[in-house]
Figure 1 (cartoon, rainbow, N blue to C red):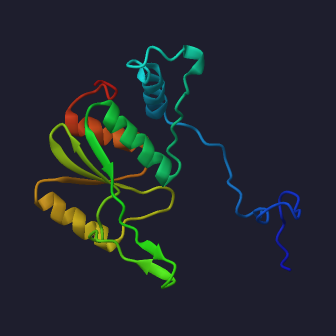
Figure 2 (figure 1 turned 90 degrees about the horizontal axis):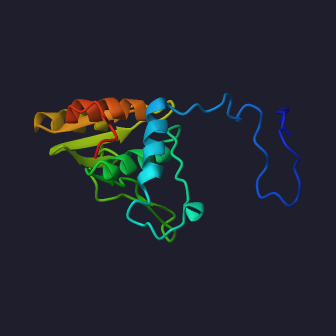
Length: 177
């Protein structure tokens, strides 16, 4: 057994051992201002077309931007909310149990995580959370996409996405439908 310090109590009822002190997340998550404003407005108007649902029974949607999946979910919700189009592109392979390996997807390497149309412009948004950095194939696709007249950007947080959205639309109010 190694000399790492374990946090938590290990018991036979737990399915996995507790995380080491090194792996624990340090610091408290602070939601960006832009995401707080969008989340508030989204929750105020989410049930506009469903007035028969009582206020006490309405579920509040919470957005975050500290992981790639959460940031993608927030961006897709914003695109839909503002009347634009956005779809998640799955470029990962599918695990084949019989072969014991991943089968490659039919997507081109380097394609972005989100394919969108914002204000009539073709936009590709690649999510980069944490220490994730652009790969060489993503940079090549970015260059080709821009040469064809599209917009291909790397986004690290919701505030960066809002700046991109405002640059494309020319609107200062990013929650305007």
